Length: 293
Image (tube, rainbow, N blue to C red; front, side, top):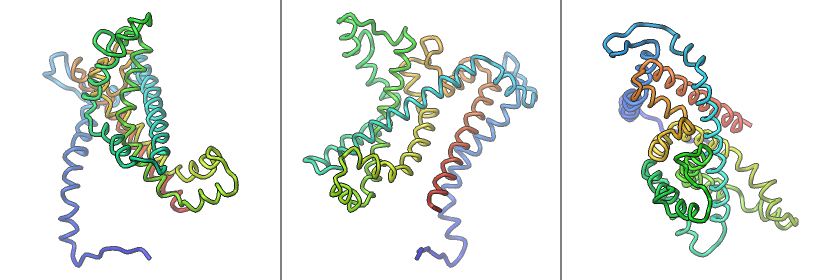
């Protein structure tokens, strides 16, 4: 039987929900409304006058080949970050779920990187991979490997993917450990008694039961890679070399803050917001269908 809390009046529920509604209105609805409004405006070169242009900013946006390149680059970046972070987190969670000595300390240490700010995480990776001051970067150059992510496109993308994925592994690890602990031990033990090896048990029992968690984390990781990696990319490469690591969120900042093209920047923000809303709706639809089944 489902248990629910019944309030005698309407004042207390409204009072309890009001802080969250206020935060949503101030930090999401108001900025989103401003972004939609400015996406229909165009400013002059001096920012003194604006005019209503309707959907012209969106038309110019999708006809710009540079924006198309940023979309392709962002899709690759988000997919790479999500795949790497989730794969490493799942591997670590499987080992952490076993009965090993020091398991509690092991789990605690793996959670720590989640508390590191994106810009700080980027600085840590600079100290490791920078071609002049980084420990690993200098070692690679000293041993004849041409390493300089400041100049080479592929290396720059690899570095930002690695740094962004490392920051997200801890978050994924927490959910994977919780998902593994929710799997009935009796099912796994029955498969072991039937002679199923570790990989077969993982593929036929553990992985299917983890699918809701995997799909949830997939959406969360895609949103994280699309939005929350700006600090990491800005500190590591600033979107360079050239535009090799300029994802959509970096392009929004560059067009709006540096190039002062507020209309185009707002239109890009609206497109990003629509993509996140679509991903979230898909997540609720799929997970809701699974719960119904």
